[in-house]
Length: 200
Image 1 (cartoon, rainbow, N blue to C red):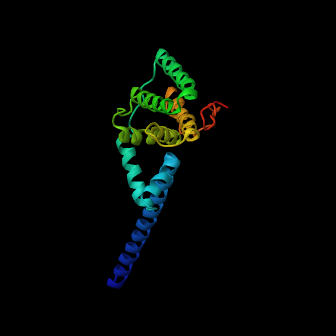
Image 2: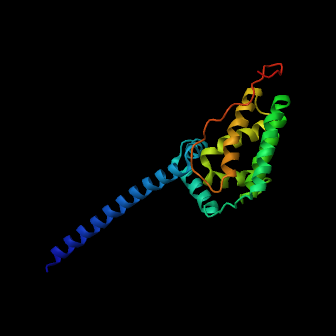
Image 3: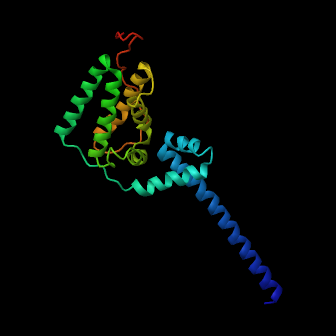
């Protein structure tokens, strides 16, 4: 074989290898992004916003969360513990009529405690708990964030009511035997209150 043929053959093989590498990199990146978007749902878009639109930075953060918390196995709840949590949530709903802010505080603590009992990081490590929950229950996480803010004095009565209702989605999800990656579902509303505090 002549030297020119060998050089051309090497150049063709090098170009083919380069084309395959570029195709793999582009395809792999898109698949990773789509996979993260599918897994994290609304949490994916939230991460993009927090990173000022930088999808790569958001995907790195989400991939790191997945690496740290993806292998977490949720501990099952004994039936008596499940009943205990249900009774406490019913009490929160009753408390809402007289004291929305205290109901939000109680809901925040109850969801945090339930998450901890299911095997997520401790309630006192809120950000770490949120990161772990985002890997396993991303579709229900926004309500927990909202009720956490409401418990710390953010929002009027209507906003607190909506936060407690949304937090119930994660609460109910955590009561089940295992994680589901479903979007939050609508639940019956808590009583509405007039500005002066009477229930509607």
